[in-house]
Length: 352
Image 1 (spheres, rainbow, N blue to C red):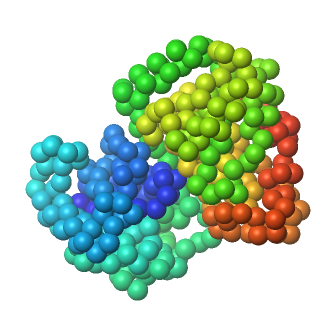
Image 2: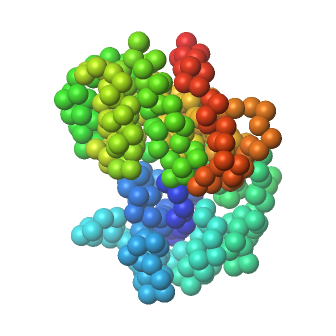
């Protein structure tokens, strides 16, 4: 019988759920309920039988979308489900005995309950915990990938090895060809540093990436990665370097294409965002810039030779779990006082 993993949170959380998925796949087949971007980043994952999409803020918004998704999950648990539109279900299966609630909202818990999952396992701090049959202690001292991994374990289990906690994503041939084409057309042949200037939260966007690109240009080419919202920032960054030494890939690649281009980089410099988790999944050394948040929240980089950068000694830091829309005190010192030279020197230290 298949197991269901529910993870409809941010893209980085989806990436950090892949160690849990890999662990569960050792015991049974695994289906994952996630968002459309989540489904994109989980494509080709050999540990996943089927990926089910729940667009809770778009096409599946509201009660009608909730009911439709419950029906989809029920059908998938009973009969299997096509992995992509038009595919034939691979086989017929029993209903979901267990749902692992990697995303802890009350809505997700209600969905798993309504879909008939007999066991619902999640954190004891989650909003939906009243509907769980098993509550696992949320340990704030652990990395979130490890917290999620422990959902599948009893408390007497051995601690996980580092390789068990490394996230994994799987770019395919299409993504590799797209990256080959982009780099070739841009004239990028030298080793490059990937820069990810974006974040869903405004106060987590470090403002000195253009200056950093200028410093890096002495030794490396630069590739900017990100989504459509990062295109204009990317253009400013690449304008600091001559042709053939920089390319703005923001908005030009699918999610797994971004993972592929990060995977080829000598290193990544990123904000506290999904890009650092893609680098962890691809094994790329990372310098993560922290402002209003800190790595102590459990969302730091996991790739070898990775580290973090931030301003120490600020009594107001951290000020928010995710990062507020604007600095509560109006000075934004946590980002403005971290210079491009400091981040450059930290990056050079891990590359050496």
